[in-house]
Amino acid sequence: MISSQPNLAYLKAAWAAHASISAENCRQSYDEAGISFERVNHSWIVRKDETQVSTMPLRYTRQELRMGFLGRIEMEARKAAAEIEAVLLRDLSLPDDHMLIVEVEESMRHLRRRGHRALAIFVVPTAAADRVRRVGMEIQAFLDAPRACLYAHTLNTDGYAGTDLLADCSKRERHPRASTYGELGQRIVATLHNALERLTNQHAPT
Image (tube, rainbow, N blue to C red; front, side, top):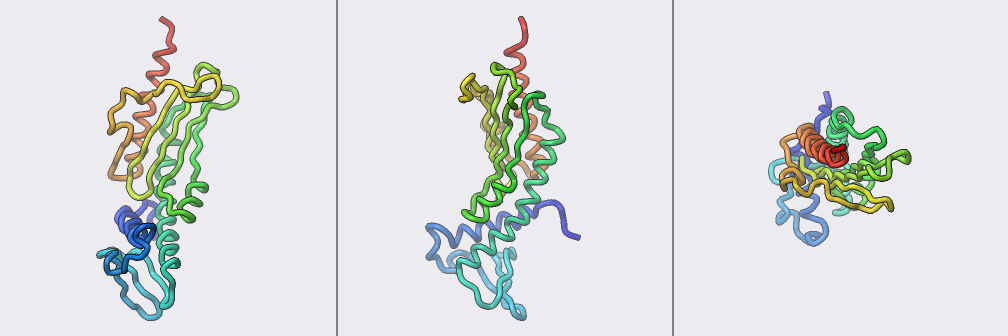
């Protein structure tokens, strides 16, 4: 049975393997990159250190190997995205005039094409939102390990960022890390709920 949870050890190793032969490391040898090959019948088992990260045919190019890494990474990254999205949809309570946007497909396109590691998530006001109570939130959830960067601001009448709603948060709250993507989602929810509560208190009648 295929697990619905992302394999975090694989993600760490596969991203490291991809980085070790890409960009400034594009001329690095496989030995220097810590990548090894074991022939099994008509294919190669590819490992980064001790972790299997891909399977390749007997003939392949370096570019095909990089793309092979990203293809396998995407499979696990989609599981990570689904896990964090499920928590946000279930637990994140937003004002009725705001909505959550999880850009899974756009993020996966960036992953496949450029090796981009982040899942982009936004909270935006709807057209019906009160112009003086609008907020904008952005979550960059990274797909190499359960970690994220959070941003939250009020929006002025022109739609530009105003007050930083996370200004009083600790670095750990603004850049949460966790042992699983489900736990990461819960930490994100807690921080954003606190930000929304502070905003509500600011607008509460005195």
